Every structure is written in C-alpha cells, then in structure tokens.
Image: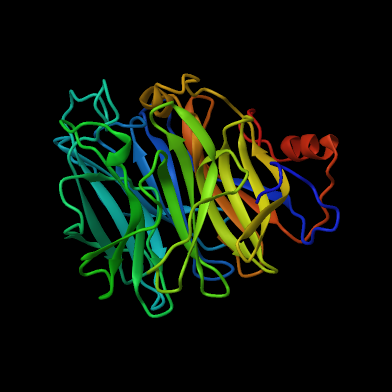
Length: 404
C-alpha cells in the first residue's frame, strides 16, 4: 500500500532539500540557430567526474536529432561538450536518441533508437495515431571516457515486427547480465490496441553483443506500462517502476512498481506507488529508501519523492517540487500524441554522487529554448514541511527567470 502523495512522517530520516542548481547545456547562440536539448542520461565516474549524453536537434521530434556526450570534471558545476555519439544525418533520413550506462570496467555503453525519417514526416509517430515510424536499436561504446565512440552495433531484437520505447539505460546485474527495460510499440501501418503494448527487458549475457531473450516485467492487461526503469536494490532484488496509462479510457493510474528476483526470472504483480507521474527516474537510498524524480501529473512541475520500500510495501514519506517553470502540455487525455508534442519539461535522469547526494538532470524550456538543467538534492538535511520552505527553495534555485 502507498501513503497519499506527499504524505509527511515527522519520524522520517533522512529528509532532503535542493542545494544547488545549474545548466548542463543550453544553446549559446539561440538567436543564430535552433538547437534544443532533450533527454539527459547521467553517469558518475567519481565525486568530480560525471558524464552525460544529451539529445540535440532543431525541435522535439526533428529529423536531425542526434546524441552528444558531455563531461564535467568539477562535480557537475560546469560541463564541456566532448564528442558525437551519433551524428545528425545530413540527408535527414534518420534521427537518433539514446541512454547511457557506465560499465564495471570503466567503459561507456549507449543504447540508441534509430528512427527512419524524411523531411516531410509528421514526427516520430503517425499524425492520426501513436504508431511509430520504422526504427532499429543500436549499441555504441567508448573505451576512453567518452572522447571517442565506436558503433553502431545493430541489435537483433528478441521480439520481431514491433517498435520499441527508448526511455531507459541498460542495467547491469552482479553477474554481468545486461537488462534493457523497454515496451513494445506499434509501427505505422499496425493497429494501435492496448494488448499490442508489452513491457519487459531485453537480456544479454555476453556484454551486449547479442540480446536473444525477452522477459516480461509487467502483465499484458488493461493498463499500458510505459517508461519503465529497472534498478538493483541493496538486497539484490530488482525494482521496476512505470507510468501506468489506460489507453482505452485515456486515464492515468498512479505509477506502478514490480519486484523481480535477482536474476530477473520472476516478477511480482504490479502495485501502486501512490505517485501520479511520468518519466520517473529512481535510485536506491540507505535504510530501505527510494528517491524518485518525475513530471507530476496531478500538480504542475518536476517533483522528487523519498519513499520507503519495506519488503513489498511502498510508503511515500516526503515530496518536494523541484521545478515549476511552465505547464504547456495538452490537457486532453485522449490526445496523447498532442500531449507529448506540447510538453515543456521532463525526462529526468537521477544518480547518486559518492557523498550520497542526488544529482538530477532534466530538460526544460526556458525563454523559448529547451535546455538541460541540473539540481543537487541533499538527503541529509532537515526538511521543513511548511509551504514557505518550498517557496524559498524555488526562489533560491531559479534559472532564466522561470524558476527552479
């Protein structure tokens, strides 16, 4: 069971606050050329050295979308653009987006969706439906901390005749097994039906060379489970969280979670987190706690929640708004394509720094330009639950006149 969203328990330790904000990337010449930034994916080498991939392009679904690697050598305070992971297609015949994983040997792996495009298409999905353009999945690697990249290594998916969502990085288990969480998605020309969406993981047991196995993590029921993430808990169980959406009625349920065995072979039935959010990113904290960062649905803004996962019981203990700069998304629940097209922020990536603080990167539109903004969350300071504290937090961490 889950406590009501934002429920506060005075006995909760540790509470959290936002202590630092910054910008990972913003187009420095937005008056000259259109370059918007989306979907950061962050990794931590050590307390000073962070890396991130960012999707850059002229617009949210433009045919020139491509993946770029950035690096910070001062704990995320400033960032330097280092290399293309994928380059923009000069003929605009394909676009790319991806997520980043730091492997145990210090190398980097980017999993990338390559979408077939043409300059006259309607975007990544068909205008009258949410069916995807044709696409493939690729792997890119770097053995020199992101300075150079090899690839593509084209993946032969374990499920044929479908498109796939690209919302999660690869998760690596203790034995080296790789899991890539995703959901199937209809391609243009296929019927869009609730039963056509399946959520699970690609499985590789050879370092990402092949991905022959598919394990379903969520049931194929009246809900569609999108934007799923998987992480390894301290007790080696696996936790997955997902946005739950009923396609037939156009309504959202609270985010759902499932628990998996350490080898990912069996998963529990979905349960509610009590959080209404999209693009949720999660990391484990000490003392059975989970830090979640997400675009909240029932209230505006990007939010963070610290929850306790005691066995299979999820309880929300503290919540804070992190960014409330804009609304901007379509409010019609049955027009999900328009909803995505009008979003003004989202896609958070959250990681833990070696000192236990949470580092958050997300995209947001500030003064007409989509940038990658960052926040550091201190989970060791006492959190005031009064409204004035939240107002102070937002004013102290403002950027670009629109507010963190």
